[in-house]
Image 1 (cartoon, rainbow, N blue to C red):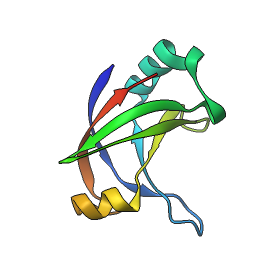
Image 2 (image 1 turned 90 degrees about the vertical axis):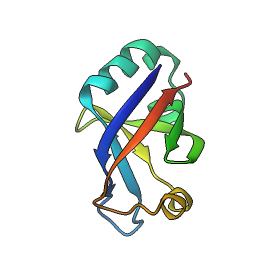
Image 3 (image 1 turned 120 degrees about the horizontal axis):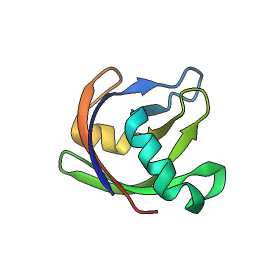
Length: 97
């Protein structure tokens, strides 16, 4: 199941400075319905992400507050693609669950 998404990079409040993208509610609900029973630790779902010319395998994690999945965005990927906190980016999320 593939999704083309446009979202803003945000910074987790706290000392760790983790960068995230939020999977929109509509897409999150589809993922939960289709793959929720196959979730792994912490409710994670395996995905392949493509941002620009960079693709990588990772997981999305459920956020109870928003009801959406969160995608952590590694520093290595941010450097390769020259993106930062506050940027609105387009990416492809391919759910592997």
